Image (cartoon, rainbow, N blue to C red):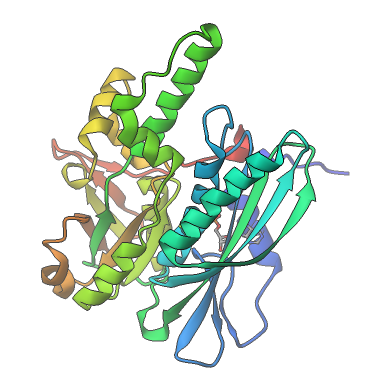
Length: 343
Ligand code: ADP
Ligand code: MG
């Protein structure tokens, strides 16, 4: 018997292995594994979108600093983000939880208060789920269902040469927020009388604990009359996501360091931690911003948006996915992302 360690495949390798074993057979299955959401044709002028994401205690969150209410909100937001990444609108969610009797009824109420707040914020209905005992901490799995007009759908694979690469919001803040929370936790464990000093860091910590899905951008693009040629949400860091767009579109890219949006708070805190803000923006993860490409002709329609940065353009050389530094140097963009299976 051969035993192959999961770490030899990594997360993406494992998904690819599963993907190879399951070829969709139904004509209604327009897109299976490989994009932010599955795409299903129900015979109307809209596609149905389905996406699932799971949050696991000790892997995705630490209850010593993540309030249950925020966690519930985040579990919904990250799924809504995948619907937005198809240029779609979320409609319903199901929520499954694995619980141990470590949790009180009040604690579960808190979790669901956060889920409810997210349902209101994103205008989705909770329509089902599952409840199980768990022996290995809290597990929250959310499935989001959404819709998109067929002619407005944005896959990861649609980018063309010279398309402009766009990023919403700013990057790296969530990762810096996580570093702050981890530092506070270490200091608290050493000195339990210490009070957390996170008031000045509210933006960064908020980005980590309670991220928002950019459903607003889907509406903004619609109002501007722009359909992205490709789109993905930034859950694993800009580097990893740009490589997904390039790989699936068969394109290369030039991304300009000076155009990558990074908040002042992120710069300051990165300095404090002696890490490079650029590296954090490229590889930090959990930003839940949108990365998309547009045709050159659409630039005028959104160039003044305060929510969108134009960070580069696509090229027809799939071998070259490059970062152009402020000094003019060119470096291949490499994915680090989250490699949970290697930890
Ligand atoms: P995202 O970061 O957008 O949530 P993932 O990287 O988690 O996307 O997943 C990429 C693709 O692989 C998606 O289409 C997802 O549905 C699919 N996928 C992930 N895990 C599995 C699995 N265990 N079985 C089948 N498909 C999976
Ligand atoms: Mg995604």
